[in-house]
Amino acid sequence: MRLALFQPDIPQNTGTLLRLGACLDLPLDIIEPCGFIFNEKAMRRAGMDYLEQVSYRRHNSWADFLAYREVHQTEYGRLVLMTTHAAVPYTDFEFKPNDVILMGRESAGVPDDVHQLVDARLVIPMKSGARSINMAISAAMVVGEALRQVRKAETIRIL
Image (cartoon, rainbow, N blue to C red):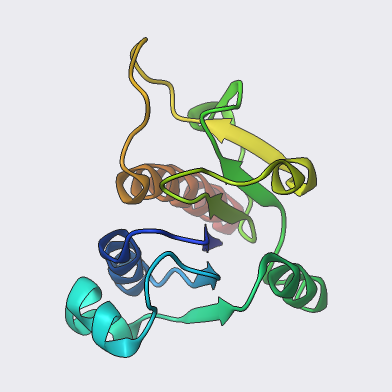
Protein backbone atom coordinates (compact mmCIF):
# COMPACT_ATOMS: atom_id res chain seq x y z
CA MET A 1 0.00 0.00 0.00
CA ARG A 2 1.14 3.54 -0.80
CA LEU A 3 -0.01 7.09 -0.28
CA ALA A 4 0.30 9.55 -3.18
CA LEU A 5 -0.03 13.30 -2.82
CA PHE A 6 -1.10 15.11 -5.98
CA GLN A 7 0.54 18.55 -6.14
CA PRO A 8 0.28 19.27 -2.41
CA ASP A 9 -0.15 22.93 -1.41
CA ILE A 10 0.72 22.92 2.28
CA PRO A 11 4.16 21.84 3.49
CA GLN A 12 2.90 21.07 7.00
CA ASN A 13 0.39 18.54 5.64
CA THR A 14 3.07 16.96 3.48
CA GLY A 15 5.42 16.81 6.45
CA THR A 16 2.71 15.28 8.63
CA LEU A 17 2.08 12.58 6.04
CA LEU A 18 5.78 11.89 5.57
CA ARG A 19 5.95 11.38 9.33
CA LEU A 20 2.90 9.08 9.18
CA GLY A 21 4.62 7.11 6.42
CA ALA A 22 7.76 6.78 8.53
CA CYS A 23 5.82 5.59 11.57
CA LEU A 24 3.63 3.12 9.67
CA ASP A 25 6.26 1.99 7.14
CA LEU A 26 4.03 3.35 4.37
CA PRO A 27 5.77 4.60 1.21
CA LEU A 28 4.69 7.96 -0.23
CA ASP A 29 4.73 9.49 -3.67
CA ILE A 30 4.87 13.25 -4.07
CA ILE A 31 3.50 14.30 -7.47
CA GLU A 32 4.81 17.74 -8.37
CA PRO A 33 4.60 20.61 -8.86
CA CYS A 34 4.04 21.36 -5.19
CA GLY A 35 2.52 24.64 -4.03
CA PHE A 36 5.67 25.24 -1.96
CA ILE A 37 9.38 24.75 -2.35
CA PHE A 38 9.97 21.06 -1.67
CA ASN A 39 13.42 20.83 -0.17
CA GLU A 40 15.03 19.07 2.74
CA LYS A 41 14.98 22.18 4.96
CA ALA A 42 11.25 22.81 4.47
CA MET A 43 10.38 19.14 4.91
CA ARG A 44 12.61 18.76 7.94
CA ARG A 45 10.75 21.67 9.53
CA ALA A 46 7.35 20.14 8.67
CA GLY A 47 8.25 16.45 9.09
CA MET A 48 10.60 16.91 12.00
CA ASP A 49 13.31 14.28 12.28
CA TYR A 50 11.44 11.53 10.42
CA LEU A 51 12.58 12.39 6.91
CA GLU A 52 15.41 9.82 6.94
CA GLN A 53 12.99 7.12 8.09
CA VAL A 54 10.36 7.44 5.37
CA SER A 55 10.43 5.92 1.92
CA TYR A 56 9.22 8.52 -0.56
CA ARG A 57 9.59 9.20 -4.25
CA ARG A 58 9.16 12.52 -6.01
CA HIS A 59 7.65 12.62 -9.48
CA ASN A 60 8.04 15.70 -11.68
CA SER A 61 4.48 15.45 -12.99
CA TRP A 62 1.33 13.34 -13.14
CA ALA A 63 2.59 11.85 -16.42
CA ASP A 64 5.90 10.88 -14.77
CA PHE A 65 4.00 9.26 -11.89
CA LEU A 66 1.84 7.24 -14.30
CA ALA A 67 4.88 6.12 -16.29
CA TYR A 68 6.70 5.03 -13.12
CA ARG A 69 3.56 3.21 -11.91
CA GLU A 70 3.33 1.34 -15.22
CA VAL A 71 6.88 0.01 -14.85
CA HIS A 72 6.38 -0.92 -11.17
CA GLN A 73 2.98 -2.60 -11.32
CA THR A 74 3.59 -4.99 -8.43
CA GLU A 75 4.10 -2.05 -6.03
CA TYR A 76 1.55 0.27 -7.62
CA GLY A 77 -1.88 -1.29 -7.90
CA ARG A 78 -5.22 0.43 -8.16
CA LEU A 79 -5.42 4.19 -7.89
CA VAL A 80 -7.93 5.01 -5.15
CA LEU A 81 -8.81 8.70 -5.14
CA MET A 82 -10.15 10.40 -2.05
CA THR A 83 -12.58 13.09 -3.16
CA THR A 84 -15.64 14.96 -1.99
CA HIS A 85 -17.07 14.15 -5.45
CA ALA A 86 -17.64 10.44 -4.80
CA ALA A 87 -20.54 8.33 -3.65
CA VAL A 88 -18.75 5.33 -2.10
CA PRO A 89 -17.69 5.78 1.55
CA TYR A 90 -14.13 4.67 2.23
CA THR A 91 -15.41 2.33 4.96
CA ASP A 92 -17.47 0.42 2.36
CA PHE A 93 -14.51 -0.17 0.05
CA GLU A 94 -12.37 -3.32 0.04
CA PHE A 95 -8.74 -2.23 -0.01
CA LYS A 96 -5.95 -4.40 -1.44
CA PRO A 97 -2.31 -4.57 -0.33
CA ASN A 98 -0.89 -2.71 -3.35
CA ASP A 99 -3.51 0.05 -3.58
CA VAL A 100 -2.31 3.62 -4.02
CA ILE A 101 -4.42 6.03 -1.99
CA LEU A 102 -4.36 9.30 -3.91
CA MET A 103 -4.95 12.61 -2.16
CA GLY A 104 -5.62 15.75 -4.18
CA ARG A 105 -4.42 19.30 -3.69
CA GLU A 106 -5.69 20.95 -0.55
CA SER A 107 -6.93 23.92 -2.61
CA ALA A 108 -8.46 22.19 -5.63
CA GLY A 109 -8.45 18.38 -5.43
CA VAL A 110 -7.46 16.83 -8.75
CA PRO A 111 -8.38 17.80 -12.32
CA ASP A 112 -11.05 15.95 -14.29
CA ASP A 113 -8.51 13.95 -16.31
CA VAL A 114 -7.16 12.45 -13.09
CA HIS A 115 -10.70 11.66 -11.92
CA GLN A 116 -11.22 9.75 -15.17
CA LEU A 117 -8.04 7.67 -14.81
CA VAL A 118 -8.45 6.39 -11.26
CA ASP A 119 -9.80 2.94 -10.45
CA ALA A 120 -12.00 4.05 -7.54
CA ARG A 121 -13.32 7.27 -6.02
CA LEU A 122 -14.07 7.31 -2.31
CA VAL A 123 -15.48 9.84 0.11
CA ILE A 124 -15.37 10.39 3.84
CA PRO A 125 -19.03 10.85 4.84
CA MET A 126 -19.49 14.18 6.60
CA LYS A 127 -22.22 16.17 8.23
CA SER A 128 -24.36 18.10 5.76
CA GLY A 129 -22.94 21.55 5.12
CA ALA A 130 -19.36 20.61 6.00
CA ARG A 131 -16.94 21.34 3.17
CA SER A 132 -13.99 19.08 3.85
CA ILE A 133 -11.64 17.64 6.44
CA ASN A 134 -7.98 18.60 6.51
CA MET A 135 -6.15 16.57 3.86
CA ALA A 136 -3.58 15.08 6.26
CA ILE A 137 -6.28 14.02 8.72
CA SER A 138 -8.36 12.56 5.87
CA ALA A 139 -5.37 10.60 4.60
CA ALA A 140 -4.65 9.25 8.08
CA MET A 141 -8.26 8.12 8.51
CA VAL A 142 -8.30 6.29 5.19
CA VAL A 143 -4.82 4.79 5.57
CA GLY A 144 -5.84 3.49 9.00
CA GLU A 145 -8.91 1.75 7.58
CA ALA A 146 -7.01 0.40 4.58
CA LEU A 147 -4.21 -1.03 6.75
CA ARG A 148 -6.76 -2.52 9.16
CA GLN A 149 -8.48 -4.32 6.29
CA VAL A 150 -5.28 -5.51 4.62
CA ARG A 151 -3.68 -6.70 7.84
CA LYS A 152 -6.86 -8.47 8.91
CA ALA A 153 -7.00 -10.23 5.53
CA GLU A 154 -3.32 -11.20 5.82
CA THR A 155 -3.90 -12.59 9.32
CA ILE A 156 -6.82 -14.68 8.09
CA ARG A 157 -4.67 -16.10 5.25
CA ILE A 158 -1.92 -16.99 7.73
CA LEU A 159 -4.30 -18.85 10.01
